[in-house]
Amino acid sequence: MSVVHTNGVHEVKVIYCACLDHKQDFMQLFANRLFPSTITQPRLAFTFDVLKDFHIHSLTSKKSAFDYMRSIR
Image 1 (cartoon, helix red, strand yellow):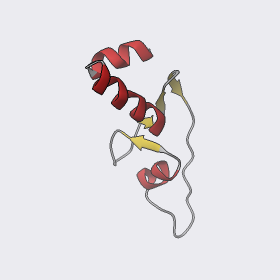
Image 2 (cartoon, rainbow, N blue to C red):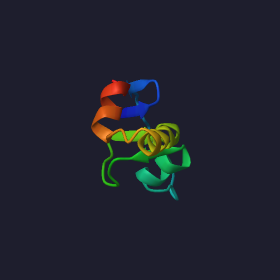
Image 3 (tube, rainbow, N blue to C red):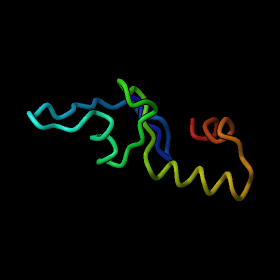
């Protein structure tokens, strides 16, 4: 899974809980402060820190999401 954080894009291995009463995969990501790009088979997630940082940048400098991601990479 690719995870976008304020210091770059990282490839990480994610193992979801498979207990009898486990939460859905995207809910497990939310519980760990990751915002998945989709709720079905997420392969990309954003940390809550990067979402907050993008929000601040977009409000103060009117930076587009494309430009923000280009600066992260």
